[in-house]
Length: 552
Image 1 (cartoon, one colour):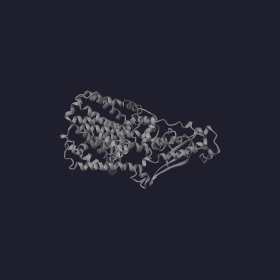
Image 2 (image 1 turned 120 degrees about the vertical axis):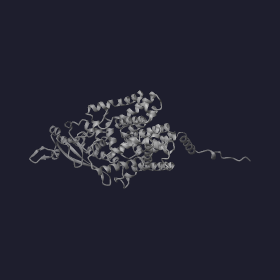
Image 3 (image 1 turned 180 degrees about the horizontal axis):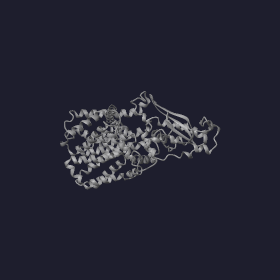
Image 4 (image 1 turned 60 degrees about the vertical axis):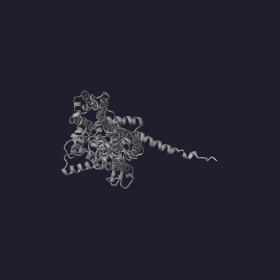
């Protein structure tokens, strides 16, 4: 007899075939698989994240509703990108943050390409993966700030400029790409200007590349990229060089005590360890120190990476000893440093014997980096709902409370709209954070003007836009910090005003957002209409002049 064989038992199931196909794809295209999976995770996290926009995000989004060639503190790229994204997807948190995920993730491709060009594909992939696992890169791919487009353009220019130097006569297409990314970077953040002296230092310090200092194409590329700033310069010329003045304020003398400055330096120092992850930061620093000591023996690519990482990193740390710096200042220094450290760990660099057990250090870079990245996501999602909410370890306080404040204000607005049948004008005197949050989270995204105190001068972009014509409105709702007076110039336009509500959102612990809402009746509205009995009762009067309204 012939034995019957169950042929279906040898046939792989659908899920087995899918799994094996996925493994084969990852093996054949590891970079594409890595970038695709990472982008999926980041976009999914943005889509389902319960956290509000931070104040900077809503502030830059508000810029995008008034497109211009320049703004108070930054070049215009962040506003242009926000305009494009929200025009296509609508004014939502996902639309605002999606460009951060795209730029942060695809920027890793430039890291991979540069590492592969200088050493090999394994070095490039390792450098891209290690950077992707740093808490700082995780955060910068979630929050849409000026660093997202700036860092993308920086690493792209880093790669394209190196490609220019691989030919005795730089090809025009590499010159064009370098010019493009340098120019777009300059439109993203002023820090991009640092690229020019750093590559100049590299060319001066590297005999094999020094002849490029006489290359007309190199100088033409530099000049053409700087021409991207012409609209920004012209805008600043029209506005009394306000961006230059704001940028210079970061380097002005600090009047704090030596102890206070030491504390700030310590905060910055340990902040860098946390942003990069402890093991990777240590590996990068040891690698850079070894590269400085052995500089004469370094190959051209290693000198290039050192000049674009170690040199600016030392300068920034020296500056942090004299004034307070934000943790993101050295962000552009780490891509080149991580590439060089990856080459050392894999034995692809001329820097031999830097680490006695490179495989051990590499393993711990992976472990700590993966743990740090996971903890970053966990801190964003779990801590706000835990007893740690509002504590010093809660990094989400800046990302919570804005939507709830807008909801509370919306209720007040609807109550006040019932008096005259129309919504009052909204004015904020409480700073740009609440101003931009109300503009983003209130229905219909109203333009919320900011009325600063008269002696404050220009402190943000809102101060550069025109104040509303108070006389043309019957009712005004003013949002101000608790316990602070109204600006004198605003108070002088009022016939009367009264507190109508308090806005309070607890962030956990003893931390909260607290504001007061004032209903203000302009003097023109008071004289144009006969007040009702209710409004007379609510009008403050001077003791000796009972019929004359005054200010509170």
